[in-house]
Image 1 (tube, rainbow, N blue to C red):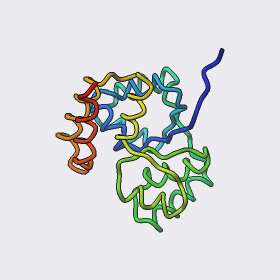
Image 2: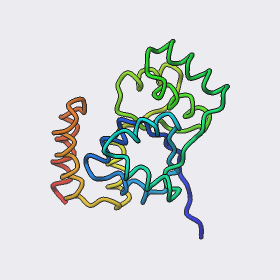
Image 3: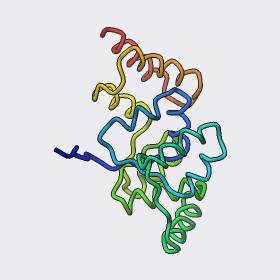
Length: 171
């Protein structure tokens, strides 16, 4: 029986970087989410240390890449100007609408911009919760990932991390 795809998730660069840094990016693909990014975000990711992991997931077909049409690029430029975000970030919101996807991002400004245009979004903590819930990530490894996230990303709400560390430490 084919696995049911629950939802489409579009990743922006910062959440991919966070997930690679804490060692759970490949784990994400054990879940039943169809996962997309944009060609503009992929170019950003190719410039960093996450390049090899990202390229492998694209090559395997696990991470799908949406190639923007000229009309979509125009919408991205308009979104960029209106919301004062980068063009790759604008592409994530525009394509989340095209794919009817949840935007997976840790960028506060991008989350606010997405909310203004009615796009649903989630962050890396939701992704970790999903991996734990699906048993793709065990509690000790989840706690290690949270500790790494706390050290590597000052913008993640530390009280939310601590709540999970305490709860997951009970198992």
